[in-house]
Image (cartoon, rainbow, N blue to C red):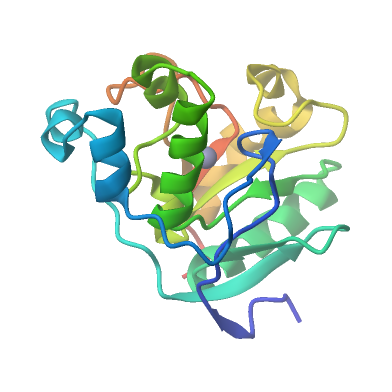
Length: 205
Ligand SMILES: [Zn+2]
């Protein structure tokens, strides 16, 4: 039993979001539209398309891949979920513990995150160097994961110094995962050694 068996409809994430490091104060019943947030920030979808960002649809069928001690669940599409479980087991056998910090995130949830940053006074350039605009995050697809290992701060470049990262660099591709935002990536995002995406070309279907 690998934990990818049960199927769930996409749920809104709520509460503490490790990806942004603060508590969302926005009601989990509020559906924030990406278009509304773009208007609030004075930006258009064209702006992001000119930057070369790719649009991603929300996954609609998701499996629970990991449940944290605080009850927070992380979800991926089935094949990414199974590939992650296989990769995690292989890493463990090689002596490296890896865990998920963040997996599926809806466009609506991304809109909440971006709006919260905007409302806290952060400028657009700074917001979108770190966060994808809603509708443009690989996390919408249920194929992207933010990974960490014990002893390292989550979502920090320092992760690249870990043995777990070296193992991923060498082995993740054989499970179908690749690092999407390397140094000086063409999308204009910061270097994210923790962000990996399942592209389906590994040993696990
Ligand atoms: Zn990520």
